[in-house]
Length: 335
Image: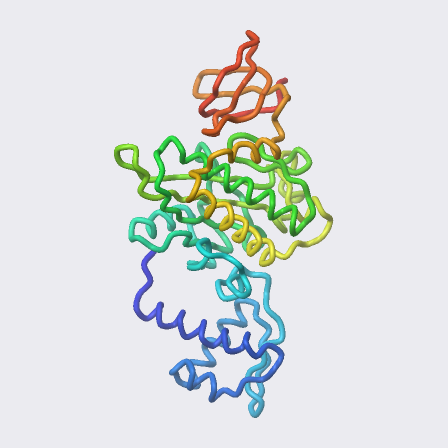
């Protein structure tokens, strides 16, 4: 997914032009100013203006007045995301794609090259998005939030799941702040609203001798996806738009989500996620409910009691004993 030198220059010039227009929002900017600041020709400026319009930016052009930015689209473009965001680590660098096969795959390639801690990879559309157990993740272009964060935590492999816990908690907090909706967490890595799935978290990592080199946390969040039109998943999934009855600003939600991730990750660096499970359990949708856990060919039933510090599910099994479940597919539908 390496960009050529020409593509990098084009991206830089486009961002320079957009930043000037954003800094002068609602006011015309003479074409000569954009030419001088970007260091490219008048035709080059026009090409980038056309590209920005294609992305959804409402830019008015006048021969004498110049270029005027009237409105910005609800897209997850880095300059829009980073404008006014309050983070110290997460999202300081953002790799943005209109279309990509998988943000997790791209993030792993970037992590191997040593990009900064907290780098985000975001796309408007994924062609091969997936969740746990290699299940596909359905998402129409420009409707959801699809991204991955690269972390370099100094932890043992046994603590990696705490980053999944961290991401789930951050998503719950962001949804509450922006949408005023109480999302719940279903072990091990899903968020639900009104008993339907709204978000999934996929954590992958590279390690050697129990030392984690990097961790990639991918999040897929249904925002303005009209799931009622999708017969395949409409009975098991939902979106924030469906839950609150109106469209949600993906840009505002993404900014808030990055801020919540940043807050939790900076605390994680200091504490390694100690007592993180206490907050996770506050948001759990499975505690005190009868569940079925399937792991490979093995099946267990019982009552969920919550998770422990490592993120393992504590199950009151059919023998009346507490049993620690490390991994598995949890179902609340027991019939």
